[in-house]
Image (tube, rainbow, N blue to C red; front, side, top):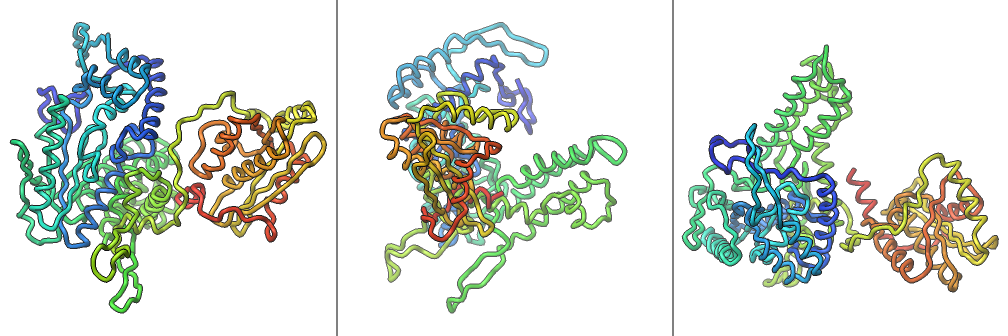
Length: 619
């Protein structure tokens, strides 16, 4: 039993969090099953796109950014918004075994999955240890063990039918539910929120799930100067009043009435400053940790703590607006005071890293510590968030936020509104790219073809393998490269025995990386090789270990179509992927690498941005 932080009355059971100590081998198996369950549930549409937690490519900051986007658009249109937060009481303890099994079968899961879940929740012996006291063993009749990797996924499947999360007004992260509604007046928002809360309570009664009334909170958002007027949300005997504090916390982000995020930044800076104080206590100029270790701790702990939630609140230093005569001009986002708060905390962290005087210039501290200032770190977070916005799947909760609202009345009928939120401004930093598909997890059938050890020995082994191939086998050598001007190219050459049968090359444009060139070269080389091979086996040889891992296992997001095409071809034909060490250096590999860097007459293959290009820009 672990005590919850910031709890004053430790005599209550709610002030403690039970953590199940499970077997390591069992947790490893549960982690594998949980990954497959979550990915299969998302691919099959069993989970709502607006419900995150224990699911791939969905984070808590995504939900907070989506909520800020909806509220900000309402404020820009001089409307009102309201955010109601609710919490499941007991969460994992409230899951009933038979009801969960019934829900799994209704969702279409295989009978073997239901049997495994039944076994997972049955015949569990529990002993509670509190300090030095240990209870006698007993068998719980319901509930999921808190601490198991499979429990969050099963709980999400249990809560998959919550009405507001299935609609377009609710968000969920594990057992935390947020209802965001907009309207012309605060009364409209309260009425809409009350209807959503009623549907949640009705669903809870039908499924034996209770919600903690003490954790139900409300915050109204508007541009009105009258902050005292905040209508209550009433629903079936439950009254939710606006929080007394100036901000509402949800998913560790503090939402204030006008989305200024002053309290949020203060809280994050205070937490990060406490971590800096701990580091300062264990190191000084005479003893303690070396400067390199303290720098790593600041980079890995202090920066993420201070910048948590920046995807939702940071809007950049300036933004472009249209003047009265149509002229575009730059205006400040008025967030300089928030950046200065973070900078003051980071300057203290730099003095903890370096043995410097208190009067040392701040710029010199950041330069000698090789760490970014607050503005640079925030811009990097914003750029990474832009790369994420451009590469999330179509059913992600952030994807609908990128489309502007279309006017339905007036002379601008059918034209997208020019009003943009800070999320949409962040997405404009990078061009659009093809969104990846959430495909089922693919496990390689054999060991990785990448050989560990010295490359000279691997090259010798590869040369012996080539010499031992039958003359009917077709071998395609592929390669990709990038020129100094940013152009990415690919090339391949095909051999059947000692005879060179064909070759080809092309360009991908300036919005790609070498990784994409390697993937496209493997795809184009395989296409050509299959036309020449007839029914004979085909071998694709390349030197990029990351591309080889994607061709033999789970496909990455960048150039995903190329990897999926190779997977489909390998399922129907005799296709093998082989890693070629760079030390091989034979004529076929050099011939494949040479055309990939050429320009002019090379075939141009899709100049759209790739995910690897966005990732490189966001780092």
